[in-house]
Amino acid sequence: MKKVVTFGEIMLRLSTPNYQRFVQAESFDVTYGGGEANVAASLANYGLDAYFVTKVPDNPMGQAAINHLRRYGVHTDHILKGGPRLGIYFLEYGASQRPSKVVYDRANSSISQVKAGEFDWEKIFQGADLFHFTGITPALGDAAAAATLEACQAAKKMGVTVSCDYNYRKNLWSPQKANEIMSRLMEYVDIGIGNEEDAEKVFGIHATGTDVTSGQLSLEGYKSVARQLVERFGFKKTAITLRESYSAFDNGWSALLYDGKEFYHSKKYNIHIVDRVGGGDSFVGGLLYGLLSGMSNQEALEFGVAASCLKHTIHGDFNHVTVSEVKSLMEGDASGRVQR
Image (tube, rainbow, N blue to C red):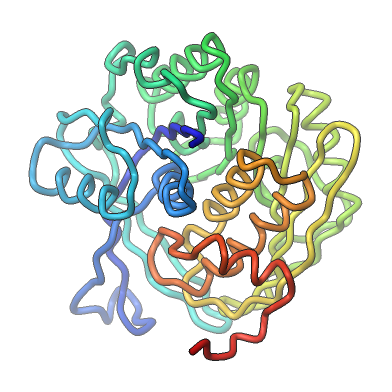
C-alpha cells in the first residue's frame, strides 16, 4: 500500500444553511477541512495509507478536528498539540449569479505558530512514497513557510516524490511574497498542480486568449503555461484544472497534464454544483491516486477530473466517492440514474 504524507492546516468550517446570506443566518452547519487535509481524506478513501501532519490546539476543538480526520481513515499519528487556537472559515453558499463567499478567521492559529524543528520529518517520511503540500501553508507566516521548506528538504533527501498545489490566496499574502517563497519551494517539487489562475498570480505566467471572469479559457494558452512551468522549475509533471464559470451553480470542468514531452487533456464535464469548496483538492487527490496506482498519464488525469466532478455534488470539504464510482463516470455513465 502506497504511503502519502500531507502537511497543512485543518480548520473548522461554518457554512450558512439553505443558501442563506451571512446577515440572515441564525445557525451554521459544522464540518472541518483544509487543502492538504482534503487530499489526505481522498487518498485514504481510495485505500492508500494517508497521513496528515499539522498542529492543533490542545483543547476540545483541536481534538474534534483530529476525530474528523480519523473518521475517514486518515492517520493522525504525527499531529502535534499546542498553540493558541484552531483556524475557522465561514462559508456563504452562492446561488445562480451570486457567488459564494468565504471569510477567514485564522490569524494566530496553532499551525501558523509552528517552529522549525518541531516535526521529526525523518520519522514522518519513513516508508513514504509521496509528500504533498499547498501554497496555503507557507502563506500562513514565516514560521509555517520555514517548516514547509524543512519538510520539502527532508522529503527530497529521503527520495520521496513531492507534489504541490500552488493554491494562491490573496487574503494571506501578496503575489510578490508568494512568488518569492513559492519559487524557492518549487526547487523540491516533482509534480506541480494549479488552477486556471494560480500560475499568473504566483509566478506571473499568463495564459493568452483567456478571461477567467467570463469563463473563456484557451487550451493552447494553458499548454504554454504548463510548458513554461516545466521549463522554469524542472517539474516531472504539471497539471492545470480548467474551470469555466457560467454561474455559481453551473461550471464546465476539465484539466490538462504535461510531462515535459506530451500534453494530455481530459474530457469536459458540465457540472451543476452542490458545493464547490474542496473541488480542486479532490482533483489533486484523484490525480495522485491515479499516478500512484500505476495508471497512465491520461487515465490518472481522467480519474482526477471525474473524481472532482463528483465531489462538486457533495456537501463538505472531503470527497466521499469510491474508486468504482469514479471509474464508472470515467467510462461514460453520467446519467445520474437511481441505482438499486
